[in-house]
Image (tube, rainbow, N blue to C red; front, side, top):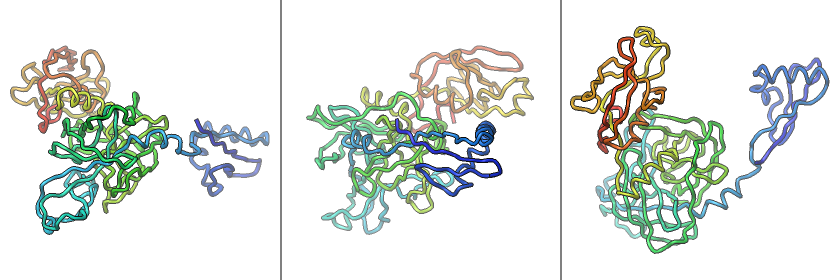
Length: 407
């Protein structure tokens, strides 16, 4: 753990504090955030009364070189082919340019790169370019599905500039993840997926292949968690502010222990296609679930309840006599869905799943999706002022179909 210290000095009669130390800023502004906190303000006032300094510590690292050195060799560039319209008739967009329609301000990378030397301008065969990383010594690697699309093979380039052919083991359109396999090696450098989610404010490092520049490292923090861009209620993205540019999709995002906390995905928010400090990563727990299934059977199955759900507002809770706004309000079961067959009705509030409290619709959708199709689950339901327990046998979520909840 690296530590930087700064002292905030005050004295009687002074109305502002100056920060002295490794990171300097304009005197009154540097401590503004801290000075608004009552406990900190009280501590400064007490220190000022006695004419002594207040010690402040932070977790700012002195540098990232040790982490980068430990993990960078596991990061790869990924290229795959795709049949498209002749190059002379298409826009030449780099991977990551936000020109595909998504919810407001959120767009995804199209498939296309600048002209490839030696490839005729009118050729319908083009390549896509992205990033990825090895997760095992025997050649399993993770990238974005949109980097490889429907291709069966891809080309990967390692940090030491060696090139390998990789088989596409499987892809998952819901999470936008793909699993690759390089054969013939059992000594490849690899990294591990984090066992716990990062906290908002934690430092992160992103390493990838933006604009074809392999091994590019950027740093930032976790800006937010559990972001949903509206593509499905299954979205549960980590928002980061590390600069992410075209071609970095599929690359790993590391914590300072060298664990992968997320995979950079193809969603960016930018008016130009360049980095504006808002990017997203697929969480490590999602990556683990998807990769395990792709490795085992080449595809991903998810549980499906088959009902539209929405948040419980304070007004709804008050009207039905519920003491809190936790839970998920059932709007309309789909015909012949598991929910409809089990007797779930519009207006029911699902308050628990297998005895665990349901905090909100997103939490319910995520847990349902993580369950194996055919699994019986017990739902706690609040209906007309009474708590009921309803047994439901989950169906299978179509790979490109509705959300786990049923949308």
